[in-house]
Amino acid sequence: MQIDAIFLHIGVVLIKKSEMNALCKTLCDFWDSSIGKKLIVAVTGVMLVGFLIAHMAGNLLIFQGRESLNDYAYFLHHFLHGMGIWLFRVGLIVAFVLHIVATVSLTRQNRAARSEKYAHEATSRASLSSRYMIWSGLTVIAFVIFHLLHFTVRIDPDLASMKDPMDPSRHDAYGMVIAGFQNPVVVLFYIISISFLCSHLSHGIASIFQTLGFNSKKTRDPFHKLGLVISVVLWLGFLSIPFLALFDLIGDGEKDAPVPMEASVNTELLFRC
Ligand code: HEM
Image 1: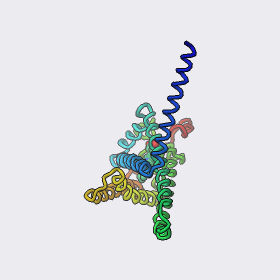
Image 2 (image 1 turned 135 degrees about the vertical axis):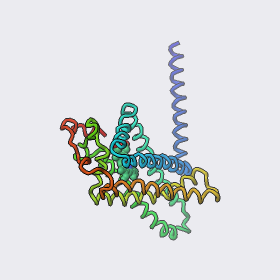
Image 3 (image 1 turned 180 degrees about the horizontal axis):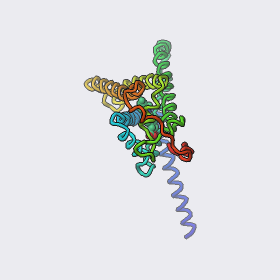
Image 4 (image 1 turned 120 degrees about the horizontal axis):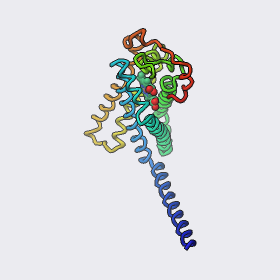
């Protein structure tokens, strides 16, 4: 009886292992195929564009005033008892990394597949756009790192210690954004990076529709225009904030000055974001 149970257990383990192997093989085959990678780029692209639209819409609450933006920031940090933002962050990081890795791998695969005949012509034609892609890609990555340190980790203690004057128990996201855009060099960096990002999107969004199968003669033009419209709306929406804050066209002067938190709260800097 016991021996039967042991054999049964070994059998189940072996079946599970072979199922796992089959799953791994399917995933590897999917990743190795160019259509698999294109699908990954497209699906993660949809997720990232969705994030950008939602993030811009949330940021625009700044024009409704301090209370609206701070309520929104408070909600983001507290929904699902604070777990929500971490689930969202994990999804965002996975999408961001997969999007970059699949794009780089796809580009390499395509280059390798090019025939010798076109090698010279293709290299000289590709070099300009790939050089542009590398610099625009690096600028966007540098921007994301800087932006996270700026507003999420808040390495500047003046920005980290701002308290909402209406509710001193919570952080003043509104005051932080306005104070964060008082430096023209920072604003210039945002303008350059967001312009690169939106130029990337203006091509990327149309390609997503193409990969997802909406590639007829009839739909190509409207989707191309849709990509352009979304990129321009994101460009204007995002850049309106640093631009207007720099020229004091949003915010209410004195009230935006940092109100320091108590020292004990400041020590929680790393856990807060
Ligand atoms: C100038 C326009 C922008 C403003 C004013 C802005 C503002 C902010 C603020 C205030 C936060 C912190 C939210 C909080 O923790 O309470 C934040 C987080 C973030 N922003 Fe932006 N943002 C802008 C543009 C962008 C762009 C263009 C991207 C993407 C390329 C981006 C990506 C992120 C990410 C990934 C986070 C972290 C979200 C998290 O906390 O998990 N932001 N942004």
